[in-house]
Amino acid sequence: MEMRRAGTSGLQLSRLGLGTMTWGRDTDEHEAANQCRAFIDAGGNFIDTANTYGDGDSERVIGGLIGTLFNRDEVVIATKSGLSFPDGIRNVDASRANLIAELDKSLLRLGTDFVDIWQLHAWDSLTPLDETLSALDYAYTTGRARYVGVSNYSGWQLARAATKQTSNSMKAPITTIQCEYSLLNRDVEIELLECAADCGIGFLAWAPLARGVLTGKYRNGIPSDSRGAAPHFAKHIEPYLDSRSARIVEAVAVAAQGLGFSPLEVGLVWARDAYGVTSSIIGARTGAQLRGLLKSEEISLPDIVRSALNDVSA
Image (cartoon, rainbow, N blue to C red; front, top):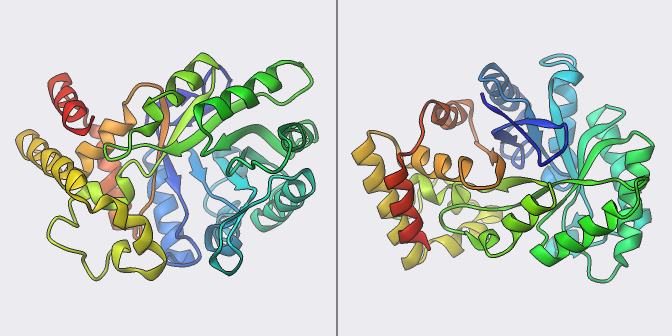
């Protein structure tokens, strides 16, 4: 698998990352090990998780694979802190005390002394930015995090944080930003991709298949075994089941048929090779599904097809 440099840093990431949001909940330890083995065998090195995934179980599952399925120095592990869902209500807390406490709990669950990338999960409008960034500095200088990043920031938020971190050589530079990006959601093109590139920050795309909608599985309804039918995922799928999304999915299906690819491959490769993208994070319920996603490594999109998809999804 092709490796790409995260911005201007020395960090090398596989252009597909392994997402683990379902691990420990919908994906058990055996299936997670199957997925991880397939991903590493395909040349992948980047595993993404967060302290909220499965209420920490995702990190525990990954921790159980370290030393048994792969050596710690063979894989880039990224996790996130600062977001929680008490009683199902979204809560952002990027205070220094909370962030450091969450990081230490993540390290304990992962069974490792450090994470390769520690990311702020969301912008906290109530906590002073300098306080939030001081937690990144602490993790970076103490070796708890080799690199630091942010997630779900807007362009101005990223620019402000990155500028503060480059103002002093003793501060931890922002290395990555992770945001949603797909043919059905191109909001980051407005200002964020250019901002990341200008600041020398690597861009990590989550949901490059628009939460599975670009596979075409929802063209004729919601399959009973899909995430769209799961109570805890349905609300995330629904926004992409409108008429605009349906039109784009049909265009992807037509392009896939003409090229001899699957809609899944076309949608994923579009995001993987889009301007400014360092790595696209993919997730699957089963090893078989993941192996299907990894087949996209063998293909690329003709410029004329990419241009047509750009137009229909603009």
